[in-house]
Image (cartoon, rainbow, N blue to C red; front, top):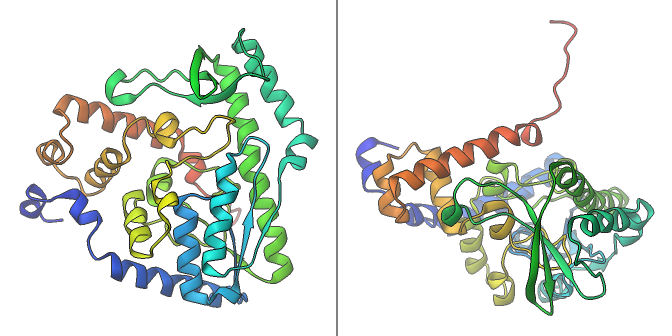
Length: 330
């Protein structure tokens, strides 16, 4: 981007520019990838969220509903609305789908029991019959750089206490939670290989940029149509493609805790529109004064947030990287 243009850029306008052409290019990409892989169609995991809804709709437009197979992959801690919204969009598009619970896989590995043990020793007041739980981080814009994760107890929809996690417990919890995404991808490939289909991923550019996906889980697909689309652009695509309003309004979430936890509460720690504008500004090397004008943030806050983003990228570099190979011929 030219320096003169950069000074006058309206970031959200740039992100939402020419969505119709973006949609056409994505459909072309999907069709080309299926052909390159010599597959008959695609399998896609549908979560009831905006990313899978947009990816599914694009696949149906590109390949025809008869060449798309959807999987709803709930587990014991999934929100009931996830499968319901997933089934609703499949039915509205006329796409065949199947619900396959991954809970038996998780129980066979004692994921739920191990998770509950960590919660019980962290939260003395925890009662599994009364409380739902979530993993959250402090709001970055209002509470600064503090990066301390804590377990929040929720009773009857109302916060009932929060407890700081020890570092080792946090790491173990993340490992246990990530088994959920890896189990879902395992099931998708089982179906894809039976049908001779490719697995369509649903990771967007915001997630890819930050490493906000599980390696060999939701990051383990055959192709990623949305991985160069910021989350804001995915919502714009959803409006263009007439994705149903309940999905459009649903807060983004990995949906792996008994209390529905949005990405803003745990991973992003700030509103999506602010985050995407900052990521866009960083990608295009826009000056601080332009970011101030677009986001309403002070220069000090912008500097802190960009440092925070860089730390996230550094810490998730291994997630985004392909496995290094030792080439013995070199």
